[in-house]
Length: 437
Image (cartoon, rainbow, N blue to C red; front, top):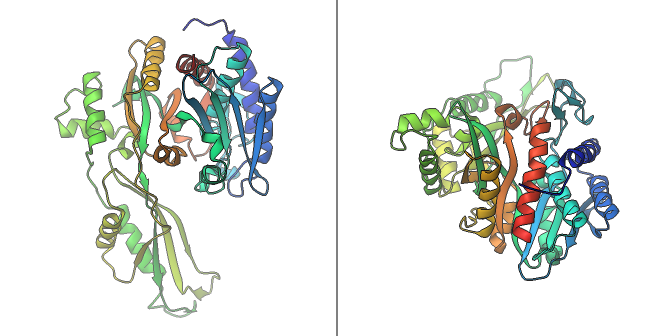
């Protein structure tokens, strides 16, 4: 990828922007993303790019900017979120909002999810302006709040109240999938691009008991049947599920030589299970994330509850999933219900597009053995609100993330290597340049 850009200087500049961005605590809840929106907007405004700040709730803002093209092609949106999940500081070995650079890594909440990608988007805009690229399509930058708690005060709000921001948009790039530096235990340059995502169907387990004094034998303590239910769920061995998307995924990896035999179920399972991220794309996942009961040590609680993060593969009806959970628990005392109403089943973006071809071209120039495949995101992203609007939306983090980096999503000591950050800056810009000029 030949370029007039001094990438060493640009990477150093972008790193300082990322460090300042990471130091802004946008933990959600409560959110408070307005300072981060203003910071990113300030970087764009310093380049002469006009920005708009959209308040979605007190202290919560999105920042939007548009570089106009000649109108011969529809717009490309670079979409990212400002908020991050909360941290438990006592379990971090570094300051989660210190943006410390150590041993070729940058640490901080948001380093991979997804402030680094937001800066890649930001610099694609900045460099396009500095180079005065002859844009054939508008470039739209959108950094939204509230993605980490469902987007009601973020993308959902913007689509409802500011549809003009999305006017003329053909493509959107966001998070959802990335490159991986290994597959099946072997080194690889495997890049997944998410064209859809799993459906979120979180469940609540609830048991009602009889409260009483903690000093006496308790024969109706609701915590105990809840514990038994959670144990049964934790021991539930569910086989891999093959959908049209995962069968196509396996076939493409077979063609690329990353899976020796795409008809050998045991070999596929062994390869898939070397990474929890890959395994999640082949199974309906269930994780206990919240357990609560009681309000005082000497009172038998009246109610015990647990919340489960559940994500379903395409084609799995949520009500059928709830029924399977009920059957697995096998205890009529345990009430199983959905935490919130179902979202529509995820839409799928087409893969046979100019943007997909550009992504593949750029990655194959960067790595001649790159394997680029459409994939299903195992996490929820703001793309799920854009696809039903007819916007072709891809989850694309242009980095070769190690398993340790992928484990940093919502984890302790989240980090991104500087090599990955620098690569992401170059790849993102080149994709934007080629699809837009």
